[in-house]
Image 1 (tube, rainbow, N blue to C red):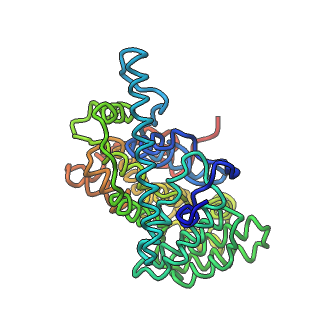
Image 2: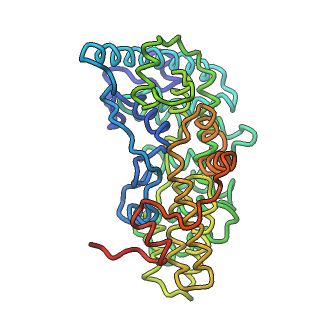
Image 3: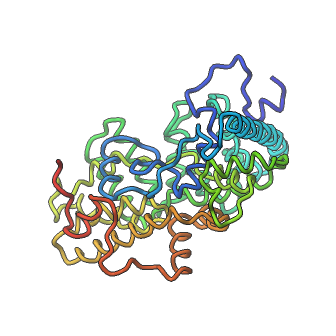
Length: 412
């Protein structure tokens, strides 16, 4: 393996593969982006464990439009045209990967902290079939050098900690300690420690300690927005090869944007799709601790849970908002804040159910730059639809029940 390959973490053909993305990664990411969410409806982004599934079920779907099948070129009149369209997309993907890998070598050679941050953000996109241990190690080295990037200390510390949380190739504890030093007032820094302690079978007192520290924080930031924003900036510097009109048309068709009133060029769609976080925070232990039905309202844990969930409800990602608001409705049921939280949940559903129709290039970019919640709110404000009409209720059965009663419906 040559020096450039070592620098960028490229693996040789003989290197063992890590279970990872399918070959259709580019299309799948694209479809996720243009279908108004970075995750499948009704599912959490990073953790499919039961408590998180329950929290998402409480909130209803994060977005209302299901992603289409990436394997089908819809609208193609016959097998021959479908084959041509598929071939054009495969070629576009191959060309893009070649351009990306060239750019990664350029970033690796620069060596400055900002270039190293961009290198770390783009490295996972360079291995569509799988992510090797070598690439993960290269990403950690790049993040180590990126720690000196001005204004990016929190993002870098978060990425380092999340890499180590998800993989055994690095030691999580130093990364967690650095994250907590850099962002002591970010609830997510302590919630990640809680999640790690829970999977290590820590005693309840230790879990409550981390929950209390998260409750004392003054904000919740899962770094999904700044990760997307910085990835967007990095991708825009890749010298993309020209895309054929046939490939662009096929891309729009797969993304169900061929009927959109907005013009979409292929490169813009690819950048918007790939400029997304590669890691999402876990919530299993947090939501296991914060079950309203199993806590005494006056208990210390219940108070800490309410504080943490309120911070999450004010987050800038649809996932954090949905989970925080939906669980707070249940904590507030029958209390003085009951009506307030139920109305906030109604507004949250209004935001999410409208999100799927925001398909303009400007909106796709705004979501990456500003965050899902701020971008969606700004667009609804522009349209004069910032608040749901009186009496409006979401499609979600659970959402309707929580809004109208403060409780989940009985299980069938």
